Image (cartoon, rainbow, N blue to C red; front, top):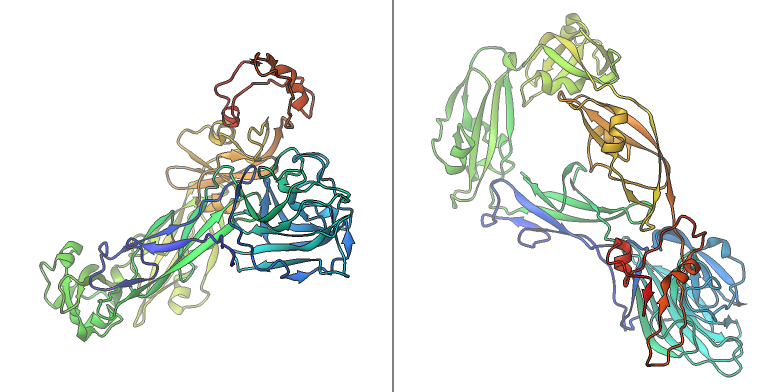
Length: 640
């Protein structure tokens, strides 16, 4: 029977549920645009798990995969490098070691050492191997003189790969009874599956009679086993179990890109306005457990039907300063990629008129200054099937907006070094441009087209000249004078030491950077301060503000911005130490005669559950783990 596949990928659709979108005259566009949305799975942190029975649908036969040519007893036999990050009890691993006793461990140092068959203790126990998966952990031996063997394989393609490890007909030591089982690790979801084809009761001469199915963390303080499958003498046939991470849901970041790689949006939904066939990709990035983000992505293709009119904007700049007489219909071929003779064109002074078809303008027009026409491009057979494009005219002599440019002095040192002069284009000239802008130090250089400047060290009062070149002409403008506005005056770098409890033991705690660190950077109430995990995000001002800390020494970055849009970047050197209360599970056995209640003082057991000194530790008692996590509904230590 084929295995059930747990491959949760992202899926992009339009508002109608279409994965690939065909836009025809009946498609419900929102003006010129449409909405795309992405559905994606919810992944959970791996500090806790839920274990449940599963359908017995193993991944292939139990004798499939790369054989280890196992000739071993009680040995951590093979180290396997994973092609994907696997999160296990909050830690990220790229290696796993196969033990001959039907188990895997993420403690790489165990490779080549003894895989002790310590199956007598209940899971969890310090007698068991660290950071391990047991499936089914038994005292087995593999020999070349019979059909016993261990196989492993990596199946599937990213982001849905799996490690499959098969323990095929391993013999229980002291018996000839074969045991066959399979352990499967899933990329992304970090789900663990265990399939047991056959695990008979041990014979009377078995050296170690117990077996175990389950998982255990590195500290060996937390473990999970299915009911009836913890350490004990039991039999199983065609059984399966799933261990599913059940910690907090991991909040992903979602970004959208077009086929050129340009970001076009963020969040679960994006509005796009294509003017030709295009592809859009949603990338969903999960910060799962400290390693590289796990990324899911899906792409939707937006295709226009042949009868749907395509329209695109067009800009034309006229040479000289004299007014121009134009025939608007002469520009039809620039306004569509289709045959213009198959479409209807009308020209309007407002977008609303173009959409309604009202107040069409004469084909002949006089251009004396910058002007925009809104062009309705329509399917001749369907008046409701149309697109609107912009036809922009300007005279090159009137295209300059200003001779003064004000820039942010980012370091407040009176110079902006290696400044990319193309960043001045939209500050100096009316959009849209229909040519190129070249910058020079002198009017003579600008006129001759020599010694062009791409970048320059700009200073206050510096002057530049600009040569605006179109396909048919060019004109020199200037001088352009550079002015500076001061950026926020801040204190940087700043050292911040934090010592706090890691309440959920997930290596993250909420932290109010603005309240604690903000006043150390600046006390100016007119500045806006936003905190980011990387310098790149701080420079671009993109992404959510940082609201949590993690343990260790690392840098975070604050973007401090004033009302003029000028900003400074402050470096915060974090030194975070998480205090922990380390405990173990404890079972107390009490005598009960079946009739009279037994008084219990829970406080006498609390010190037995601590792995450290109880001095300075306050203990509370609760009926459920959820109440203990939230510190609510505390009960008295005196119970009956």
